[in-house]
Image (cartoon, helix red, strand yellow):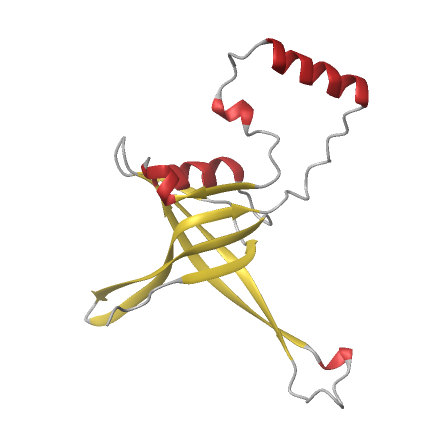
Amino acid sequence: MNDLNYVLLSGNLTRDPEVTYISPQAVLCSFSIAVNRSYSDKKPPERKPEDWKTKTSFINIESWGNVAESCARHLSKGRGVRVVGRLNQTRWTTDGMPRQKMVVIAEHVEFQPDRSKEPTVVDADEQAKLMSATEESPVEDTSPEEKVENVENQDVTSEEADS
């Protein structure tokens, strides 16, 4: 029988991501998210809106490679994300006391719209200019960073990072 280690979380970053370059090929991006769960102790007939309570869990996330680079580039404190990954437990001993840490290794991160930025409004004339410029020049001379700069939702998966 195969074991299952699969995690799906949706929440907001509690701090800015921290990037560590292990080597030129290995990049680690660490961040944590707050995940809320609403519940009520009362059953539906007598349950009122004010009976709902919220419990918040704080989850540490690690991403590697291209996923880490995208997270470092696009995420900041307060930004919403959906993370798909697996649990990873690290154990060690400090001063004779056993310790452990559980983190989620992100294999896929979906960036939610950044609500801190003003939405860009483009009128019809400007949109037509942009469209005609794109059609006239099939060769793009913009960097990948410039291409994704105004993207509201960006998905990155470890499968894409490997290819």
